[in-house]
Image (tube, rainbow, N blue to C red; front, side, top):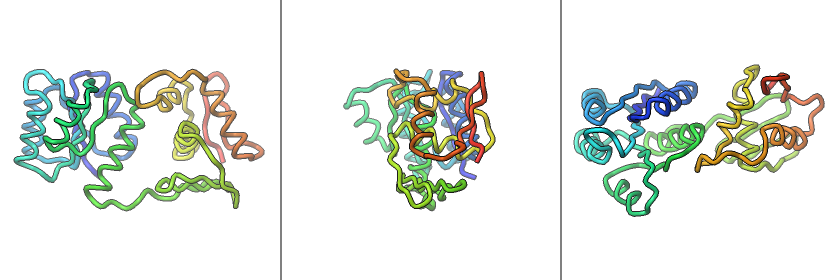
Length: 222
């Protein structure tokens, strides 16, 4: 199990990231300031650090430089509200492996963490997802129903993979909306119900494995 350290002073955001990463199978520790995070990382290096730049006390770039000097094998993804190109370049020059600008979707962060770990640790590609006639290749981002390949938009693909990875689990509409938010964090101008209807139509399965839990949301039941 890969270990992740989240360094983020916004408590709600830190808890949200920790929840998503834990659900994805990571061992997660959180810190709200640069100094305590630096001490913990140096004493027990994790596999990856999600590091906010604008931290109280010791800023994120200073923590990053210290990590690179003492434990250069640790992967680092910077989190920041600073969107200027110069800021991104500064972080990458300091040794960051990736850079995510706030606001962002927690689901996207999990995918970026997985991608960085595959790149830095040589992890095997994601396993094929299969449920009934539905077969998803996460590495190639392809979806097949039997012998038929189907084309999904990015949001439709995210919706389908979220449901199929957690068979029997009911997701509320609010949870799915949060997962489907784009990397800029903007709310979708279409409802989750519309995305579900489109995915059901493209899958073409009767009865649909995407089951409606009335008044709550949806779950995968195939």
